[in-house]
Image 1 (tube, helix red, strand yellow):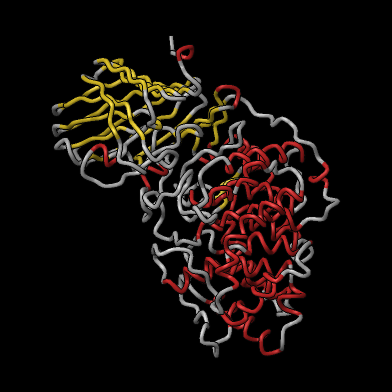
Image 2 (tube, helix red, strand yellow):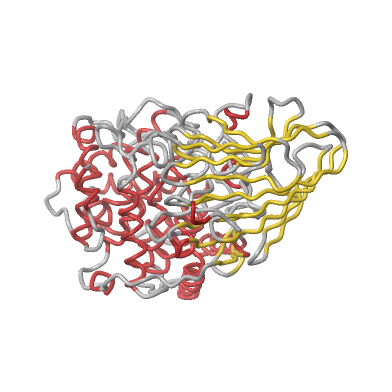
Length: 578
């Protein structure tokens, strides 16, 4: 994948070549089987193997459908897709995908099928036989009366309705309006949505809610002008915050679920381009998207044979979700929606411009205080009140004290020891020194541009008030712990890549130096500092990491702890706090 590492992601041809190179490793599986599915691996997901293979076959359409808008008139792959899609939707075919159930993974994949019909109706619908058209329509329609999660999935039904209308079916405007109104109930203002629950705000806001909303705004502005204007306005508002989630290298802040979708983090900008919404100058959008894609190509995200792997900066099943199958990472191809634009689009003519950001941004509606340190080279995000239920590693992905574009974060590999828990940037508490608990849901939280505060309860007998005060690449942590039981506490700093670390250890300080520096300094309350070797593959950034920490054993009563924590890039000696 060497060409991808040299791609500048500035021109239309840059994006076309990138997509072509990403699709190439899939072609053998696509061409050498009659099955409307692709087997990319043997790991499992919450849905069955047939659905996993169908997903691996359909998700590349997020990139191919826009690509075929202006290319592929003689593309054999296009022929293969049409043939196999028809087999999957034909109930008389031995490879029929099957009928649709409530909460079915097929409903998720129908979104990419719908986009393909919207962008390439002539080849994928108009040229079909009457029977094939009927089978396609029937298969998609099954989803419309099925139960789905009350979250961003609602947009899947909306996209299906739009695609069916585009293919000549009558549109049930009453049901469409009801679904749009439900989307409205999840809007909380200033461009932000909740994904079903008030504490759930993550990358599904840009690459789901706004992405689909902008597709709707572009394609349905004549039928639903008010809704289209509403989605455009919200996207513009969201852009004001979202630009702060990226550092100057293009790295997005890692937090939340579904991180295996990687550069789908940039799909929001692609949707702005597709919908012709200049939320900020095109030159700034070009800088953000180009840097983001170039940065992703520096990471080890492809397998030995060129497929997108499950993982984040490297192949890693430990941090994956239960709904991540081998083909799931191709959701990332949503970033190629901009290929559905004309060559005359002003984005293609724009030259990259500096992105205008300030040092700090308090995002109340997104529950995050964002700090751009080192002139934007390093973004640190301090969340408050974020959480999700029923997902793996939820406390690690939503409720750390801080997230970083240069250090990443870790998820637990097991629940026995401190090293297996990989508790970076959190306070871990244990009754017995072995089983640790960290912050999950909070009882209350608030934030200003200078601090984040919350109250939380890891055990019924323990109440903690935490205050965090960021400055540059450092922050002060203040905890007041009320407990009626004895506890061991451990305060974790930033975990750091292990190659040939330079370690400094004293009673009140632990420091690890590699390319970057991770340091934690006790100010009050702690009795010992240490370095913990973490279980391999717990960090979403690095396969092997160490963690500096502070510890103390406490008896029932009230205790106060204060420490200083730093994650300093490119050295650090000149960046020690006064």
